[in-house]
Structure formats: C-alpha cells, structure tokens
Amino acid sequence: MAKAIFAGGCFWCMVKPFHKYDGVEQVISGYTGGHTENPTYKEVCSETTGHLEAVEVTYDPSVITYEELLEIFWRQIDPTDGGGQFNDRGESYQPAIFYVDEAQREAAERSKAELDASGRFSRPIAVEIRPEKPFWPAEEYHQDYYKKNPFRYQMYSVGSGRAKFIKEAWKDHGKEKELKERLTPIQYKVTQENGTEPAFRNEYWDEERPGLYVDIVDGTPLFTSKDKFQSNCGWPSFAKPISEDKMEVELDTSHGMTRTEVRSANADSHLGHIFDDGPTELGGLRYCINSAALRFIPLEELDSAGYGEYKKHFE
Image 1: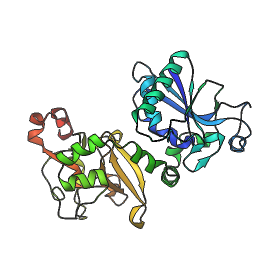
Image 2: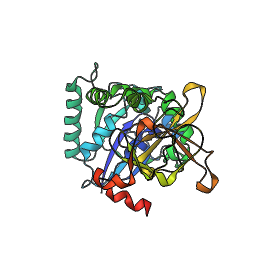
Image 3: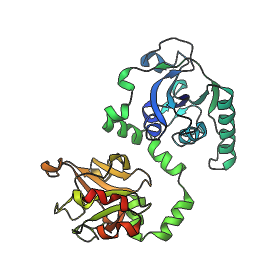
Image 4: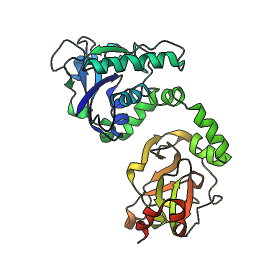
C-alpha cells in the first residue's frame, strides 16, 4: 500500500470522490501542514495552527496510480483559488498537494504544469505542492461524513457552490457533442440535463417482457425485469438495481422539492429518483426511472447483444 495526501477545502467533500475507485483502500479526513500536535477541529478553524483540512488516501499502486489520484483531486476543486475553496475561506481551507517522496513531487509538479498549460482555466493554478508533514486524523464524526450524514453532505456540496463549479469547469465538450449526435432529444435531455419524460408516454412504463435494462449512454446493466413492478406512476419502477455499485445517489432540491436523485455511476447519466413508497415485500423502495435513460434488451437477445452473463438473473 501507498499513501497520498490532498487538501481541497472542506474535507467532507474530499472523501467520497476517492472512495469509489478500485484500488483505494481507505480515505481519512484530518489535518496537516501546521505546527501543532493533535489539533482539534475548533483549533484548526481558528486559523492559528497552520494546519489545512486534508485527506490521507491509502491505495494500491498496482491497481490505481498516483497520477490517476492527481486527476481525481484536480476535478474536485477550483485549482485557481489559493485563498480557500468556494464558500470556505482562510488558510485551513487552502488547496495543496503534500508529497511523500520525490516521485510524488515530480508527478505533482508535472500534473500541475499540464493543467496550467491546458487552457481550461483563465487564471493560473494556485495549488501549492508541499513536502509531507505529520497527518493528524480528525474527530470521528468527520470521518466518512457523506455516509453518516448524506442529506447535510449534499446540501453542503450544493450550497457551497462546489457541485456547480465542478460540473461546469470539467464539462467534456467533445462528449457533449458526441452524445447530442447519438442520442434522441429526449434521451439527451433526461440523461444530460436532468430532464423528466412525460408519465405514461414513454417506452417502458408498461413493458412486461423479461429482460435487462442498461444505461442508454454506455450500456452498463442497471436493472432486470425480475425487480420491475407496476406502480401506476407512469414510469418504469424497480425495487432495486442489479448492483448498488452501479448507482450514485444525490440530493435533488429542484422544483421546490427535496428528493433523492439516482444517477449511473459509470456514465453519470441522470436516471430518475428513489422513493420509499415501494412494495414492502420487495424492500419498500421504488426506483422511478425514465425510459429515455434506458435501453431494454429482451431475455432471448441477451447472448447476441453481448450480455449473456446476465441470464443467471432469470434462472
């Protein structure tokens, strides 16, 4: 195992982005870079310790490289803001990369220079690259905050401006153009613009054949007909996905409502929402999914479509 240390503003928002990658074994929130021992959250927030909020990532370099971790880091922050991150201002929220050896220093310097030269940002990259200093784990209630307090975590991510910045700053315009050409207008609106198709006027709301439902964008298997039920809501309803690892859930406060949005993990497609009014005998959840976000593959066509391994779900 190896370790990497990154400071990107509030450490609540810096854990989840690394956690979801294969090869990342552990992500600890803590404090580093300062001159005091065993600092507390209150002390660090007082801006008198010299410490920054940071995360220590333990990873398997044979599965995920340090260069890949750097790419993940850059995409979670505003790298041009050296005075803090988003609504969080001051020394303790400054972004920084702490290298543990010469190889990491060189990789970080090279990655920073490449980002600066890319022209993605109009201002220079302001992230400091510093040598490692003692890392002090934060209080237990800060660890894995996104799991313990998902509602507050999502409210903070959105309210601070971080979520919006990341989405706009790292938009892949090449992918956007390709998807506009490949998808129908309603498929693009739903998956890329968080749209909603009309109830009862969509392709799969009353589909009853056995088969597999995959992401319309990248073909990732998401649901099977075995978990589909008639909810009379006008959209396809499922009790559960094939695997929760294929899903990302986000807080959705649009349209004056508070809902749980569900997105595909690989393609980041907006799929729909999760409600707790599903059949109790099936677990009580209802994954209310837009047909436009899905492609249905009938059971008898799984082999020819390249999804033969999923036939086991129907045995």
